Image 1: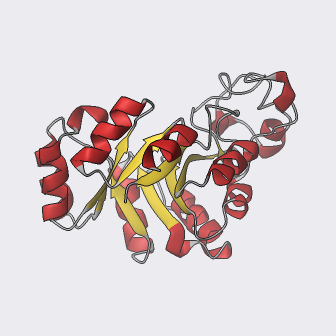
Image 2 (image 1 turned 180 degrees about the vertical axis):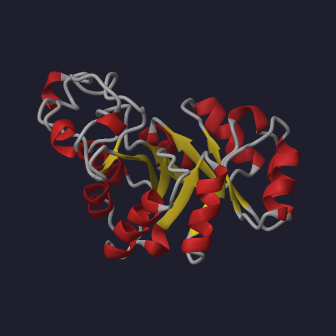
Amino acid sequence: MTLNVAHRGNPHDTPESTLVSFASALEIGVDMIEFDVHRLADGALAIMHDPTVDRCTDGTGALEEMTLAEVRALDAGSHFDAAFAAERVPTFAEALAAIPPPIRMNIHLKTVRDADDSFELSVLEHIRQASASDRALMVHHHQPSLDRLRTLAPDLQYCLLPMCADGLEYVERAHEEGFRILQPGRGMMSAEFCEAVHARDMHANVFYADTREDMEQYINWGIDGILTNDPRLLRDVLS
């Protein structure tokens, strides 16, 4: 069964990466919700894809240079539709609380802290406090930070993002490094790729598919999960 992974909630019908978007995805009946976590200037953790607030709020500026109070004062819904003007940028704690069991979470960490592991420790503390360790899939584009996380919390699940253009090379490296979950890009997708993943007892969620044709093709090839900006359409395709 292919998993319906709601990318940033349900951005097709609601402002992305907001609590209303997560609630909409849950109403549709998804299996997993993907979202991105940034560390703010005061150490708070907030949910947004971009490193700046410019695209998805009525403000401007880099998240890492703003405090939680500054970010929370922004309108995170009107850019999508005036009906969502009350939406605010969620905190990590709010996102964890808004997504109940058994729904899993694809947590993409965006902040990089090479000097120490304070960001990783803060993320893990939030996950432990929410009793969400069994539902958290950790994703990070920065390999050193991902390695630190794996050392700090070996009980969590981790996803290795592509580090090369060749899909089969990606599978081999992930297998050698002990990863069991992959998130290939669209350009890597093929029946051969899916077969290689499953031959090594691994799991792959493709990023992304937003059309019926792509969804059906990936499902036919045997992909395990699909990240999508239109989880309602994927639900209908899967059904």
